[in-house]
Length: 388
Ligand code: MLT
Image (cartoon, rainbow, N blue to C red; front, side, top):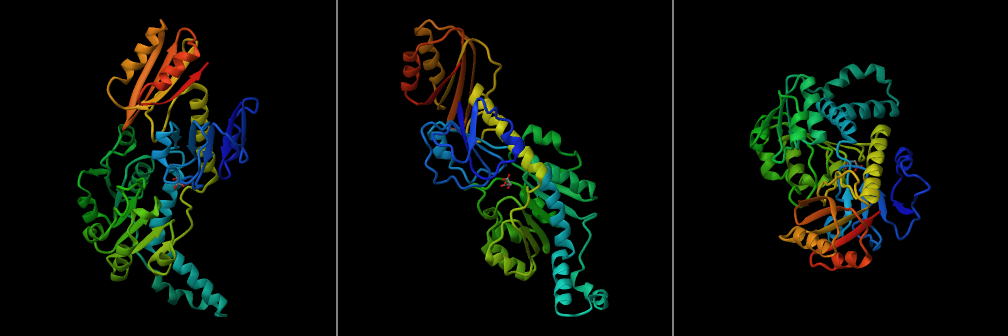
């Protein structure tokens, strides 16, 4: 029986993926093998030694201590693409709201009515304060062309916009999803110079923290409208607020509000709503559950953020899953140890990601416990798991 501890409310469709005969899934589990989480902060969570994997129903993983997980041999999964359509639709909404001041206009009508004015007599005159441009034939800049950024680029093209995209890590999959009319630029300054609207779709890391800083903003086209439904820390608020006051940035739409931001009349701030649709919550929960199950039951790794993608059909009678450091001779050390005991390897896969690597070995016969503990004791092996 595997124990899965849930943090946050996970959509029932995701919980339904776990066979109750094999899994106990609840918020109360202790000594858990797996964690399912949405946005709960696990940065200071003390992981039990039993924990093998954390699956995040969502794209961002800044609520999970990745380095600590890697060092402890805990695989971390996310669900790229599962909420992309929901975010794409919200970006569209953000573009329209930032063009004509729709939130300001709604507020104004309510305030007039609340103050006893017959709104029907003032709206025609009052509407002038909320006028703004159409997005048709304007230029959109998309920073980050992953699952969300590529959908945003394509919908912007469909709305009649000219689209510039920037992504130094553009994957083949993402490139294939991208409409061929999107101008993919190598120099972000080209995007800054041309875009009337800029939206960011990148992960928040030490490297992307304050990527949109005073320098970046000063390189943007005057009057640009900026959208950030990715993570608050990507934009440096200290640089943004004076740029909004000066009109260098006309409007900032974000779902990562702070009190300082909300005080600016040029900021449209809302709760973290980008992915909040029933469809997206269901997609994320199902994908997160499936990734976790496949890892626990088969050792297969798909969409991990700290370990390489490795998946094999089951063969042989016993599978060894070994997380180790990505250094020379590890594979040789592992296979030497297995051949010392005359064990036949049916199938093997070894891949690396950054400082870590994963070796999965299907064996033609069962090995005894001493082989497993010898493997575990190899220098630079982090975790060995046996799946039968
Ligand atoms: C994500 O990271 O997937 C989105 O920002 C939504 C979320 O955090 O749940």
